[in-house]
Image (tube, rainbow, N blue to C red):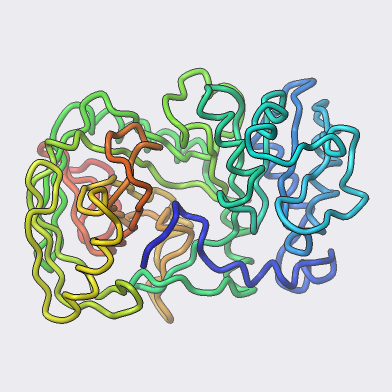
Length: 386
């Protein structure tokens, strides 16, 4: 499974959320969502806020958001269609002046303080890519409100059902944002002070250090305040729902092996894949089945495909993998105890591996230790115990 960042997951839910009634029937309350999102933004008077949306995906939410943006004293710039034809009601003087090319869009968007990336908008859309160009210059911030990112245990994307959408709504509303921020800050202090070791029952045993590399803490704080210390692109892209930390280790410090769970490479199921890393690079690998599929994907990926990308660790207990019934991985692995050990390009995290290829790999039974303290034990977040 090759992904371009994290926007290729299913958007089935939003094909039916074209009205307030449809959203309510699916267990989603647009007023609650809009109120929570604007509260997380903690807007300052006069901040200029733009929505980037796909017509038909989240239409009922757009007027709710715009009303609350204005009520907060910010400037409502309207909603821009990233694809398709926008509802005329979305338009403002600002959106009517939108240019066509990415370069021109980046100059135009440089005056936007906040952009909300609504469901369906992706980095392949010119306006979305242009807004990222603005962020890379050290200006602005975005909320990523994808409402997607559900995966089966083997890491394959699954459709967003009404039940999943309702769960995400509860998570957005009920997350203990203060507690989440405190836990992630404690992890950052620990991870800067000692090496990290990740192990799994299947045989993963890999170590690395992060040194002074950025640690992006997705704690749900979408206000302007964290932007003063933002160091990379994803520091300026705030995820809601919230929950994960992400960091790119010092590449040369990554050594050991990763034993992958059953997973899909190039549409073929691969079993028993084990990769060995020396100084951050894959030096060899073996499989029980599907070796050619792995080799084909890595060959297409280029040199970056054989490099360790990042550690991501979920902290939100409300997004934890269900312990009963059908087990699945909520919201990109942001749930407490879920580990991602990724391959490929890590420049957006402040790393040195380029090439554009990114592959996420989920581990739900990992143990993560930092120095002599355990932060995750067998897939359960334990918070730095001895």
